[in-house]
Amino acid sequence: MTYTGSSYGTSAGMPPVQPIPFSHQHHVGVLGIDCRYCHTSVESSSFAGIPPTKTCMNCHSQMWVGSEMLQPVRESYRTNTPIRWKRVYNIPGFAYFDHSIHVQKGIGCSSCHGRIDEMPFTYQQPSLLMTWCLDCHRHPENEIRPREFVFDMKYQKPADQRSLGAKLMDDYHIRDAHDLTSCSVCHR
Figure (tube, rainbow, N blue to C red):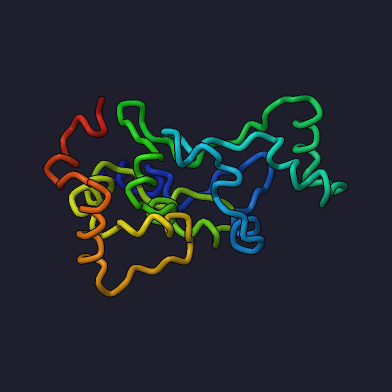
């Protein structure tokens, strides 16, 4: 049990070594690129998706064109061979997770991914253990934000978060904790 719940067992806080040292801190934090520019399916699909190399080349065909570090990106684009990124968030096969429903219901990117805009190398923020998911499903009013702030990395919960959350639960037609913690919500 100790191993399973540890950061070593869950991979929380440990950035995997990627084929290219991609920095969300640089792209999101410094350059201000919105999550949806690269993760185009996050609002409409069950998965956020790993961007194709063409997305990288939209900018990198114009800037840093001679960078040795970006040689694998150019090679991937030239040969039409995807970059083999290592998954950072890997939900077990027996659990179902849908990005789009969380986005539509007002759960911000940073609620699950942390301040990705401050991560030089991406790592899994939470444990992804069932208890972590259930904490939010039992009290979604603690995490819900207005939809217009879902992609805002710097969003701060207001002092009246519980009352705002309760109002948004009603506005967004979010079921109560009893329904949200039913086994079939995540285990299908």
